[in-house]
Image (cartoon, helix red, strand yellow):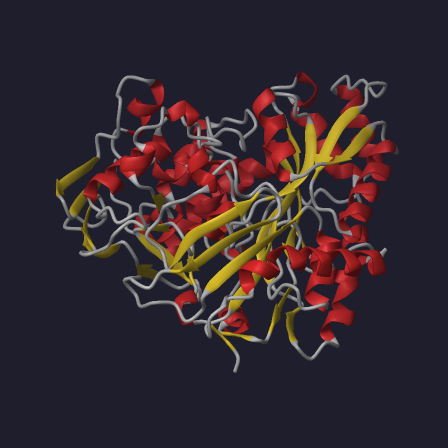
Length: 533
């Protein structure tokens, strides 16, 4: 199989040959990307945010070190009242890639686009603290009352209460879009709009070409406000599966592993570590809670005893020690941060007898199979799902695993056919980033779960910059989530990554990251990267 893949990947490279033959001295960086990240758009995907580091941008980006933010389209900001009101001074002289000036209109439009219930973005929760968000969501208002343009280059955002960490923890997930283009699109037509395959942004690279499920080419922006990139272009090569990405790393057809969808499989690490042209980070923390996901609107999973039984049924320690070869930390609640977790959580130790008892009490019908979807396609994760299937079968739960790509999974969310699956959510920077998977009305990821007390605790956790004060809120939330199990948390992942040393700055920046930063545009200084001479 590997020999076949290594023949396929060089053949794929020929697709790019004509376009790369004229490469100037700056050269080309080639990054692997999983399928399903492009066409739906930034508002409805996670992996699509990587294009918001190079083409589209936000007001601020999280620094690669994870310890602060980099001013991007906002040159500076101030809060006169301790974090209830923020006034952003926008960067002058910035133009969209089509030559249109960037102004406050774009910012006001973009924040409202994220929050618009007709758009139904899973990231709308990042703006839930903005004044008027609830009224916008329930239809009693047509926009966010708290977002105003004070002039062409100044935007004011008012929150419902003081949240001194709002910029650092929530605004970093919001990208800014061109109002003069997307403002003409009905909100219900934003998802999958043609704009996403021909994006116009403000970033260091300009969208050049997209071949569906093959590659995206972005070229250097000579007028970029932080300085023209040294690289001539970036090619995002798209793969449906992890094995061909590994083969492409080995044959040097790509320079960087995709971190969405699993990273480097544990079983492949030893071989890659022997290649002197790669930098391999084998124990890269992912801050990634991994869990069994349930559709709680399906009556089969509505009884908490069913969800608890499934966790008791699985010997998670054995899976970590054997299948995962020690890669992972047992977890019993949402938060990967130790300071956010209570110390008195139910450990859900392996207990198949208790699992059977709970299922019996809940009236579980074991004769009906459960559709169980997942998208991690490397052998270790396939083996993990097989082990979970075996453990659940032993207590009378018949899951039928189906491997799907992200686009197909999103369709199962949209059409309401989702039953159960094996998923993860990157939120290692801060516990507040877990809100889209558990707060009320957070579609599709909350899957019908709603506990107003959890929402209240998430809101309270942002009202202080003092970690000790914040910890009280998150630890109480951790107890509720540990008991109610809207998701059956299994473990926190590590995500090994590998990079080709020919790109100066690439491995360096990831070495300095404290963990894999998901779901946010990251300021990695990509405009300073270059091909080694």
